[in-house]
Length: 630
Image (cartoon, rainbow, N blue to C red; front, side, top):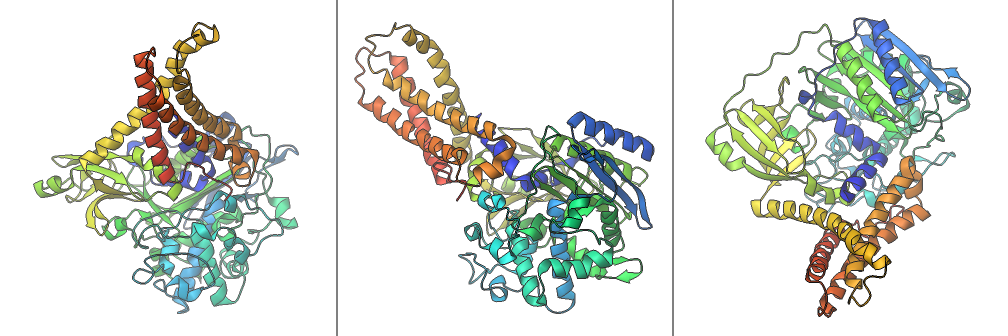
C-alpha cells in the first residue's frame, strides 16, 4: 500500500519516466483502436477525449512525404482569456527537444569534428561527473546520446530550479553534479537521464563556439522550417505560447524555466512540427535541401550500446530517438515529452512515409494515451501490416539455462532501486513460448523467433532477448535489464513483501480491537501498553508519508525540490518510521510478559522485526531520511 503510494508519487515528478514506460509498454497486448473514417470524425473523437478529461486544448498534425495531410488546433490556449488554439500555437514539447541534441551531434560527426566514441572527459573536462570504471570503460559521447551513462535522472532540486534570467548551460550543470555518477559500467544498461543531453550540449558549444540554442536555431530550426520555435520565453513566443494547466483544466502553472534547456525546453507549433516530421520522412532532406545524411538519420533510429541492442533487439533508444512496436506490428520512431501541465508525442513510420505529432496543455495521461491511440490508428489505417515471423521452438539447453527468477537491475535513479523488488519475474518455457510471470502483477507469454528472441502477439520483431553478459545471465527488454537471481533470494524477497504488507494491515486492524477499549478506560492495569502503541505509531508514520504525497499533489517539484515544510516533513516521517521500528523491538524485548496477552506480545514482536528489516532495506536505498531538496 505505502510502497504503491510512494511509487505513484515519484512517477508524478518523473514525467519523463512515465512517458518512457508508455513508449516501451507491451503494445502487443493492447487492442488497436478502430480508426476514424475521416478527418472530421477524428477531430470529433479527439474533442470528446479532451472534454472527458478536462483538457483545455491541443494541437496536432499528420504528415506524409508530400506534406501536411491534416492539422488542427482544438480548444483553448488561454482559458481565462478564451483564446483558441490554432495550428500555429506554440506548445511545450518537453523531451522531444532531445532529438535536436542528437541531430547536432550527428551533424558534427558528419563534418569530422566529433566522434561518438570519444571519451566525454577529454572533450569537456570542466563538467563534473564520476565513473569508477573510467580507466577501462569511460563515459563516451554515444552514452550521453543513448542514455547508457548509468547516471541518475535529475534530482528534484534540478527540476525545481526555474531561473527566469535564464541560467546558462554551465550554471545548469552546476546545480546537481552529484546526480552524474555511473552506477554500472557505461554502455551496458539503459537509464533515462536528463543531464546527458545537457552535457552533450556543452560539448556542442565547445566544438562550435556558439551557444547551443543559437547553433540549433541556425543549423536545424530555420532550415527545416521551425522559425517560431524557441527555447526561451521571449515577448514574441509569449504571444504564441499556450499556457499549461493543472488537472482541473482551469488553473495555470507558472512558466517552467527548465535548467537543462537542451533536454526539454523547446516550444513548437503543430504546423512547424509537421515540417520536422517531413525532415525525418525525407531521411534528412526537406524541400530539396539536404541537411543531414540518410545514414545519420538511420543511425539516429538504431540503438547500439545497451545489452539489448548488443543482443540483437531493434527496439530501444537510439540517438535520442525511440524505436517501438505497436499492436499491429509497425515499427515506430520518434520521441515523447512532458512538462508540468503539458504532454506531447512525435511518431513516424519511416518505411511508410507517414507520421504525426500532438501536444496537450494538461499533463493528463489518460487523455494522452487515448489521443495517441486515435492518431496512431488513423495514420496506419490503410497500411499493409508487416508479416509476422514464424514461431520457433526453444531448445532444451536454452530453457534449462534461462528458466528461473529475474530481477531488474537498472532503476532510473538509485533512490528508486527499492522498488526493484516489485519487478521480480519468473521465466518458464513451453514449446515455442516464453512465459514471464510476476508475483505482484500480470503475466505475459511471448513467441520465440529464434530461441533467444521473443515477440508479443501481433508484433513483427523481438522485444525480449535472452543473453549472457558481464552482468550475468539476462532477460533484456527494450529498456529494462533483468538479471537472473537464485530462487532462494527471489522467495525471500516475495515473502518479505507479503510479510511487510501483512504487518502494515494487521497493526491498525488489531488497534481497532484494543483501541476502543483503551479509550473507554477498560484496559487499566494491562501491562506494557506501549508495546502495542509503538508499532502503531510506526505505521502511522508511513501513513504520514502517504498523506504528505497526497497533499502535495501536482506540486511535487516545487514542494519537494526546495527545503519546505513538505520536504522536511517527508524526511522526518521516514526517520520516525526507523526510530519507532527499533523502539518497538526494544520495548518488546524488555517488556515483562507477565499478565500480558500472548498474542499481543508476539504480534508486536513480530511486526517490530519486520519493520526493522524494512528500515534496513529502505535505508540501503537511501529512502530513510530522504532529503528531496538536496
